[in-house]
Amino acid sequence: MESIDRTRLATRIILRAIFPVMKVAVADDPSMRKRFQDLTARIQFRIGQDEDGAVLVFDRGQLEIEQGIAETADITFSFKNHLQFNRFMTGKTVIPSIKGYGKPFLLIKVVRLLLAMKILMPAVKPGDEVKQRLKVKMVVYMITTALSQYNKAGDPDMAAWTRKQPDRVYQMSVTGEEIAAYVRVKAGKSKAGRGLYTRRRPFVHMKFNGVSAALSVFLNELPFVEAIGKEFVTIEGSPEYGSNLNDFMQRIQAMVV
Image 1 (tube, rainbow, N blue to C red):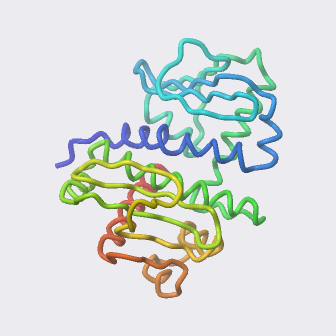
Image 2 (cartoon, helix red, strand yellow):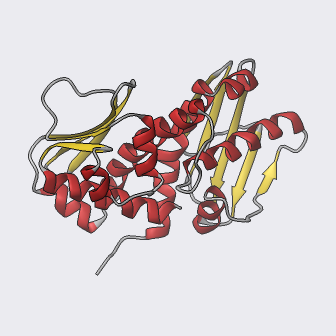
Image 3 (cartoon, rainbow, N blue to C red):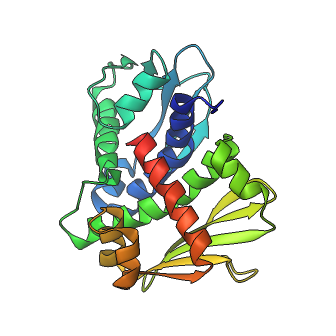
């Protein structure tokens, strides 16, 4: 029997895995970079009466994510509960309480950034190459972090899977691109990182054959096994554990979409 609160788990993944990839959108999307280049502001997202939430900290083109509740903010989005927040962040019609209407231009910029995050949705296929690369990069970063958070939150199946493993690295990368991220697992603990892990050979390395191939997989345009057969993705290392990793990725996607 599961003892984990799935709604709160989804919130955790959104705050700690999806919010951080907003940094990629601001840094890599030319229109976003221009929009936020001169901005200094703090945007709070607050959930219920708990200390759950996060702050978007803009500093002249740079964006950092602070977990928790800040003492002050220029705009605050407040949600009654975790379910309302999750629905809002996955594109459902939810109207939060907003404090900061006196700064309409700042509010418009933040709303545009939130709308831009829809690029992560499985059905969204960007039309131009810049946005396609952006989506792939954001998904690779998001999913590796989400896998670690899924484990840290205590999902029973993933906890059992990681508990029995020695020090192993699960790497994802896109051939021909500087897009790579990994999850390191050791005796039940996990840590996500970006880039190629260089201290040892990954136990499993999931290589996507370019942006187009990665996009096809992330859009679920073909089953994972078929993607391997068509060499859209290759698995170096244990096929069994690579399949396990993909199963957990699918669970996370189903939970937060």
